[in-house]
Amino acid sequence: MATEDKSGFLSKPAVVQYWGQNSAGATGDGQQEPLASYCDDVTDVLVIAFINEFNIGGSPGLSLPCGSDCSSVGSGKSNMKNIKTCQESGHTILLSLGGAVGAYGFTDDSQATEFAKTLWDTFGNGAKGGERPFGDAVIDGFDLDIEGGTSTGYVQLIAELRSLFKSDDSGKQYYLTAAPQCPFPDARMGTDITSGLDAVFVQFYNNPCGISGAFNFDTWDAWASGAGVKVLIGIPGAPHAAGSGYVTIDTLSSTLSQVSSSSSYGGVMVWDASQSYSNTDPSPNFATALGKLVHGGALSSETNHTTLGGGGNSSHSIPVPAAGSTATTTTTDNGGAQAPTATSSSTGDYNPYTTSVWAPTTESPMVPTTAAPGPATITATTTLIQAQQLAVTQKPNTDHCRKNKPKEGTSAVPHKDQLDDAHVKHQ
Image 1 (cartoon, rainbow, N blue to C red):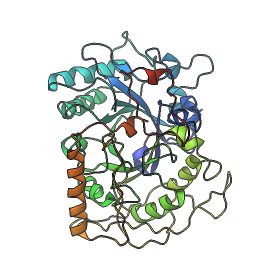
Image 2 (tube, rainbow, N blue to C red):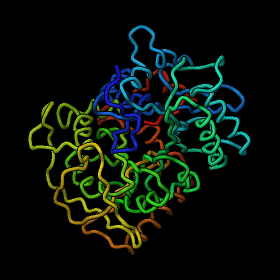
Image 3 (cartoon, one colour):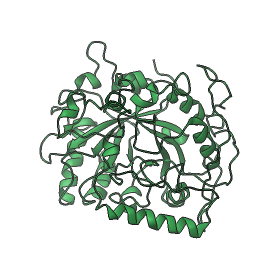
């Protein structure tokens, strides 16, 4: 029996979580549960990661615990919870392409056109009878996490997928998203690509433009507001889920209170579900507190299953909008899903909606922000960030494919699929 319809997740702030790479298992912080275990009132969208081998003309390669036979993920053999279960409860299920490791990309637009048809027939509502790793389950769209190769073909891929979506006369809503790094524009997914999307899950971590650094949401917001794209703020779900950029619920609350009035604000993206649900700070877990925050609940000074902790003041400073940008207050239909106001040294707009995977392979120094920078400072910072991006020759960010790092005194033990070099890790 269906619950509240969450399929229109772009209509109000949403919580998006990546699933498939068992990031918490690699760091010893927990274990990944079956997909539908996370289809609750906390999470609105789950992004299955990854298709890491395009194999043009053949079958796409999946980097998942199920390997090439993922029918249990889709149709639910035995007691396995599945894609259909999530969709029936009103959740959106996307499938991400790319990652930090894999064999993917196009040499020209004709390959992109061919691959779009392969995706549609294999995971969408296309021609039946061929190989379908998820059985008869039909996913709700695709996400781009392009960390390697060139930009060739992706504009065409988006256009062809849009055309195929329109061929479905069932009335089903489909989405296209991407996960760029916060330096704007992303080194591999420029605005020619991202402008054709519905939303971006921007990785505000593993970069100097993270929430606790030279936070550049206003730059993304200025672009997205004109492009009609939603921006989600991407964060790690636990301290070990990324090399840098994890923030507490208190800090995140302060940030969202400053940016949630932006017309482009779409919610928060998390890497990944295994981390955020295993992270017990605050109780019962980070994911529950995040859901309460994003969906409109105030945080109180005590934490339990019904009253979440947080709401403290933060010294985080948010850049003011760049010259010429505007902020539009939007009334949502979720009871006013804006974060509670918290003390902050500045005001600004935030545009959260991306999850790109490219970034420097080593942690970049975070730029301290003691006062809100003006437009000139923002421009200079953006230029510096872009230069840092290009200076590392656009190598893949291993922290996005392996967003987690081991705890002190431990080593990350890969699960069986992580032993396969051909499989992508978004961890």
